[in-house]
Picture 1 (cartoon, rainbow, N blue to C red):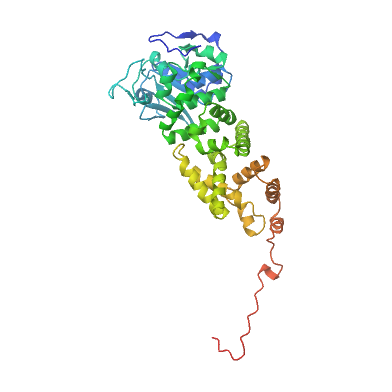
Picture 2: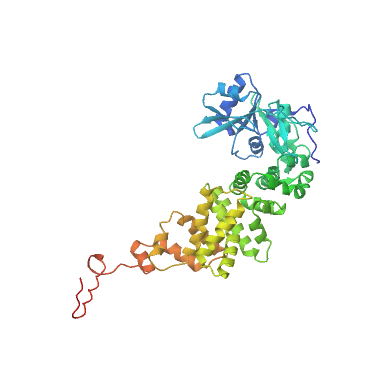
Length: 447
């Protein structure tokens, strides 16, 4: 099916409650409270986006977002526990303890060929990228601002029906991800949609509609115009949401990975890339497993994993030039980290501990002396140890070294000291025996 635009003034297909599987029992109670209060206040209220999609697929939604014809100020008047956020487009956040229900006013749409000035709301750059989108509209216009048909469904709290303007339900049933409107224009408006296409295809197991897929290769360079800080957030969504392996494969398939991690991409395509690829896939699979088991995952571990291969390769070059191993790795991690900031801006709170994890891979190669025991109390030890295990499993490090550190953690303090050759002296009181003072030569007049 071609990615046809939604005709101006199009009427939605309304799917009544008996004809779909969404139950209020599966919707957040707080989201229901917000929708009911909006409805009782005389406003329209719809559950929108990924929440509706996931409920139709029988999945548990991560978020429950709401769209309404109430302005943000009107929403704030209805809810004392509400705060308005955003500059490009104003949103209302309604707080229920740790849960936040996001409420967005219907956005005004830009019809094909229409460009508005600063006062009108829409502002685009020369490449067609949407820079400003700050006008409100109706639900019939809001559909134009949605990206994929599967994300453009509205669950109406008034009668529990689904409003479908773009055959999104049909696409969900077919397992197809399709952009609303002209794909080239939509990618130009916001190049991050290229990453979203890869991410949703990976997350949902959907295939891309041919018209949605076709321009990706030509549009990919537009990612260079996206602020690196925004790409950091997108990277976390790609790799820390439980579908990291599929996201990686999708990004590589569509030639997008290199716009996020050029050094890693170059290494993967080199003759020396097989070992790094094995490590990367094993690490991403481990991350997915932890998400599935509801265990914590961190950006620090992720970026250590993604940058380890290029960093170690550059460190080898520094060593060949005569730098000691530790200094070589320090220089390499700084250089690779600085290059990476031009593409995905990694905050210092993430990059600094990621570098520490890399450096500990060298320090953990030492297995004798008191300094070995000091590593056990290092704040990054556990993450560095997990990374060492991963490297050993994929042939990137000696399994005997990983075994040593595993066994060391299971020992008593006395056994640990003996294992690393740092046992205490057996002298009384545990104090070091003082050396006898040297006798002065005969006739000395020392003071």
